[in-house]
Length: 463
RNA sequence: GGCCCCUUCAUCUAGCGGUUAGGAUUCCAGGUUUUCAUCCUGGCCACAGGAGUUCGAGUCUCCUAGGGGUCACCA
Image (tube, rainbow, N blue to C red; front, side, top):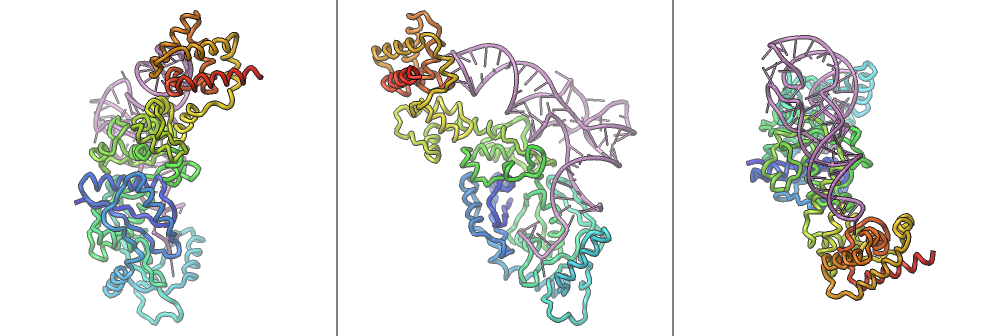
């Protein structure tokens, strides 16, 4: 049984780095028919924000990650931690330290001045005398004084850290609340975690947590430390670079499956494969072949993937999604055609909405450069005649019907396709680029097509 | 600064002692298209540097350089 977890602290929104480790953990659990648990690391009561948890769950919901059982809140488990603190105290594996914050700061400053690594000096480790008055002690755990702390990371291999790098760290603050490294170890053990997949930045916490496992007699899980995601310059990801709230990606018109596909390929791969459905991820994912090195966020690739997924999404779903972007075409009688010609040209849902608006809304202005280029010579006359021909034709429904009319028209008038197509495009769309004219006309219908042609000619003749 | 981790095209990556170092994104060129986009074809572009080990090294070892992480009564 594989049990993994995602354990955010509720201090902010979920960003893509967090989503990626969550995805890896989720995939690994689901692939093995195991459990994926969600635990909130809220032991620092002063830093918690209610909205943060909501935002995280909302993001999970959007991308389709689901967790098993109830959300576990560390703030509701203080009595459990307290019990273990008492136990360690009694067993002599932890002790009260009466050093004040001020004294500790002074010690650190001294050590820094001597260019030493700041660390607790262990002065209360074996203290038996009378404690000083007026100091609420913190509880420190006894870390090994010599030797090495060794563990086998599932990604990085064997990690060895000299024991003197780990000092007797605080497991309970002077107000009695427990600290991170202590409760993480306890909860991971109690929750039955078999595999802990987390960010690289936790690598140095692992030896500390192992001290707790050792003291409490728990069996540690397998650890996987996933390298960071950097920005395109290889520096730490900031908001500006895309360390955005996952939900911002929704607002920018990304599909969740595109974002997930993008993230799964950041640090992990399977040969040359670029496109992964969730099922394929589940089939092939293994944390053992996550990369050792950091990777960089690359917006172009995300956009490419998103374009791919938009292209392969049913029109029904797109129409539904588009409502969030101010476009409701669910009642449009040419919905299929409309989406077929626009989704191929869109990398985001925002662009898709723009493309659609460009077609279903008559142009209010005409691109000056396009007009200049398309309306040389007798272009106005050409499209006026073409409008007449359209009105005289019957049974125009499909793009091929319109195409036939266009073909006949250019043949009869002995002109090239462009002579008709260019001014027609400006008249219908207001610019030189866009879907094929036959398709646009089929979407608009004869009446609207003729209207737009007349309106355009009127507008141009006035200038 | 101490400790730890990392280093293949601009970017994501394949490679697990013998390859013309492969794919993808971007970019460029050509084709398809009445335009744009898509699509297809092709092109540019990489083993950080230096010593070893070996018949042979992107792959193993060491050193250097660069990058990152971490050193809280935060998580």
